[in-house]
Length: 425
Ligand code: ARG
Image (cartoon, rainbow, N blue to C red; front, side):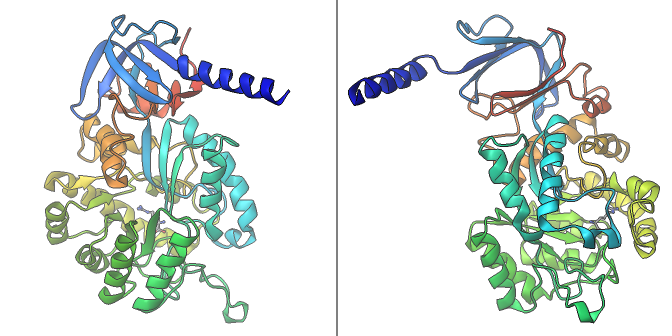
């Protein structure tokens, strides 16, 4: 009996090895995001979750493969977003957030992860979640329990007492403190180590005040240069990249000097800091869509009046500095702060990036190969080439002509598995 079982098991294993899981996406137009060109009428062969070959239609000799007709749709690498908060909801802001437990936030995260994936975003950096809920969400997705994008989780955002990454809504009696609060170089190093211990794969810290936090000022630097340097050194030593939340000029300049990998928001970046960013290759992750949501729907969602006032100043300035950054040739990520606005609408930012100085190809590059470089994942994602993970999306119109095509994605594959297919078969 045991022997029979063993034989059956080895037979099964043999079969699996002999017939690898292969899929052919046939008859699409493949967008080369790196060059901004289109390869007309091409097929993509996928084997065991990775791209095996890209070639002219009908030339890949894929006998035995499951074929999926692309019907002349435009194929692109799965999109990525360098700044999301999957466990946050856009209709729960300000004091309403105090009613949300970590477990409840994680449940929202499950729903938001699926929305994000279905919108064509196959990889995201989750820049801050309470109680490491993003690490758990990642684990549930990676084990196949729930659908969602590949997540690079930051765990708890690190920040000073009373800063943007603290929780400042309650009076003293409640002793309300954000999980990532630390003051002083050694305390900050300890937080980095703790984040690593509990599963963070990137470190997020707050280097200036913010829009949505109570009582913080956009222009004020948070952490001293000494603390920032300690944080970055510790993170890099542990193999983690560092993303800094920074709106104001001084905090941005200090964070660049400390050696961070990306500046999130970068709203008031000076020409001098732009030069430094170009020189060092630091990425700017400028969320220039979200302002429309905050000023349009923010009040009804509970955003504090003081935050609305701050946004009126920051939103417009950030778009102008985005344009300056594009002109200066800075490396641009695609980061949106989804969670502040509604998940699944990430692609709305493309049109804003084009309106403020990018070509559609530049904007697509930011969300594909650009982010892949920032994430350190160029072997896996960011382009449709042999060897990379089969993260592939399709839209029916050419996004190089009209980038808004990406707001309605018709096909989504992640790691070779199809999650959306609305193309006519
Ligand atoms: N989480 C950010 C903050 O509170 C949102 C900033 C949004 N505004 C903007 N213009 N990007 O500071």
